[in-house]
Length: 99
Image (cartoon, rainbow, N blue to C red):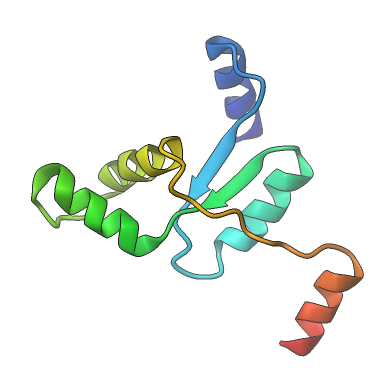
């Protein structure tokens, strides 16, 4: 994935990349930690915004990965996302301990 991202950055002349994620569980957290460690920003889009935007685009509530990726990328492009706070070091350990 990292090499693919780097290839896309070179092909399109980008300096940095933001990866948009729809957090429908806790699975995004490990990916976000990994990508942040490699200098790639991760942002979250609200699942309800994805659903509503998808229905506005084609008036069809069907769900598939290709359609969701397009909607998520559009929301990120438009700045309709939030930046997650992911603790590091001792603060991450404290969060795990509290859970």
